[in-house]
Length: 187
Image (cartoon, rainbow, N blue to C red; front, side):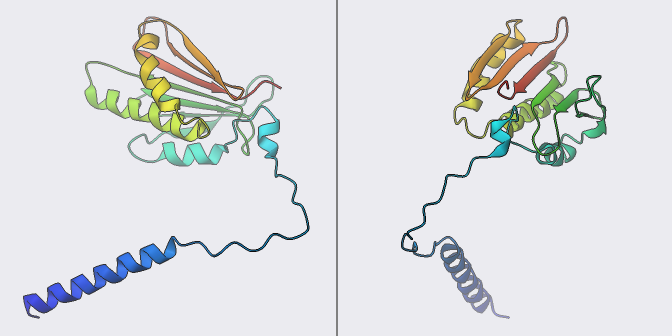
C-alpha cells in the first residue's frame, strides 16, 4: 500500500476516533421536572463510622503491581473484621478494619529507606494512592499529606480532621517506617 494512502487512512481513522470520543461525552438533554419530589439519597455508609469505601476497592488496587500486597483475613479480638495485606519484601503493610462493604479504618505502614530509592518511591506512591482513594471528598488531602509527611517522619505526630474522618501521619519509633491512619467518623 502506498505511503500516502496509508497516511490518509490513518488520518481518517484518527478523525473518526476523535469524533466518536466527543460524541460519547455529550449528555442527553435534561428531562423536564416532574411533580414528584425526590428525597435526597443518603449514603448509609456515611451514617456509620465507615470511610465510605469498600474493602474490595482498596484490595484490588494494592494487589496489583507495583505493590503486589497479599491479603489475609485476620479478625480482631473484639470480633471486628480485619484484612491485612503485606508486600513480598515486608516493607509495605496495609490494614483494613471494618465490614467489606464499608471499612471504618485504614492503616498503611511503609518503609521509606534512603538506601533503597525504588522501595521509597513505591511506598510514597502507595501513600499517595491511599489518600486519593480513601479521601475522595477532600480535594486538598494530597497537599496536606505532602506538606506534613516530613514533619511526621521527623518524629512529630501530625493529625487533622475532615468531615469527621481523622487522618494521622506518624513515624514508628526507631524505624524508617511512616504510618498513615485514616479513621471514619466516630459513632
